[in-house]
Amino acid sequence: MQFVITTTFVRGYMSKKAVFYHAGCPVCVDAEKNVANALDRSRYSVEIVHLGEQKGRITEAEAAGVKSVPALVLEGQPFHINFGAGLDALK
Image (tube, rainbow, N blue to C red; front, side):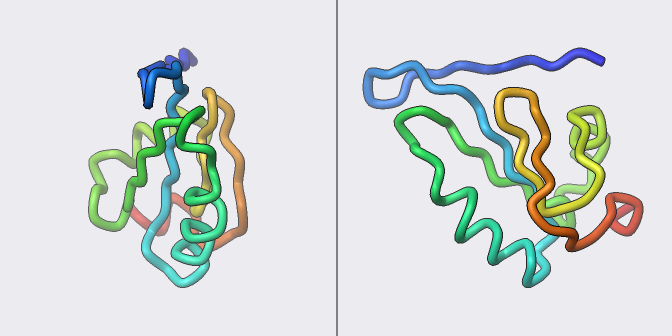
């Protein structure tokens, strides 16, 4: 398994990519408000991916180690925040 850490420049600083995967459920929406939005945008370029609407990205989430949503992949490491739905339920 190979992970790629993407860096970009935000406000003159190098930032790393964070991807927040969710399915739009109440647990996921709360996690997005409280976790993904709390990340320091000067350090992380945050992408929000709604897997219920972007089913083509489920394989990408699985490859990153995501087992359930909501989950945050930060510097190639998946963090499962709270169990809202398994990825199999989204397929």
